[in-house]
Length: 239
Image (tube, rainbow, N blue to C red; front, side, top):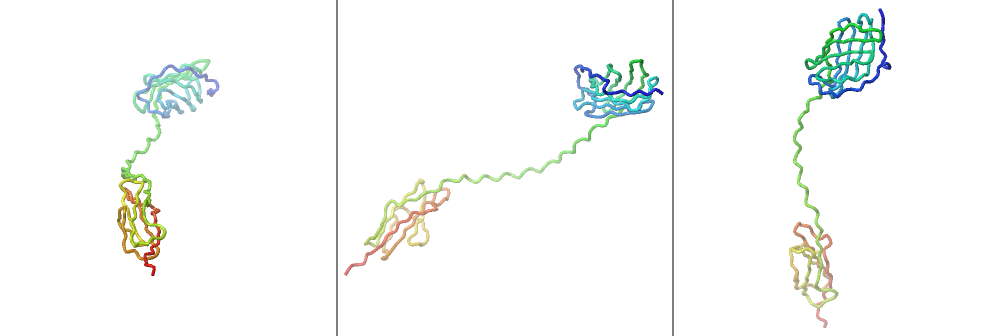
């Protein structure tokens, strides 16, 4: 029996006509089947379903051609659910009458003559479908953003005793750089208490005294460096 091996190097690439999308093609896919006289036939459909991108024959006996084995990289357009190659050494044609199926007549041509045609049916092997998308639980609500940091308030003493004084009374005035701020005051390291400017102290003992005041703004921010006033009381009568 005459054996013929079709070399891909002998096949010239044809210019494809404009193709319309084949409605019955599973793509991308490899279609494979067995010819009536034995051997296998395979062809690949392009990812967009418009072309046969490869056609392979493996030991297909077709009298009077003998046993034909070969592969062509020729790209063939799929138009109206059918395809046909009429150029080069290898001729083939087929149709897609139903999704996942292809059947038609194949012919193999050599320079010195033609071979008989035979009916062949193929089935498609399509890529595995992607796994089902598992719905994800809704994301927890985003917690509200904390309020933007505000500038810390400042505190300034504008009037009060200083140095050595000879009175047991003291009136101290103060202010803040933030309107609406409230104040906390303490004397000689005592407890912080709510106070207002023109804070008055009476009956002060002789000796050193320290007054501190800090402003607190509307957001609750306190002056980290309270304002201080130091003085000394010497109110004793000299004999």
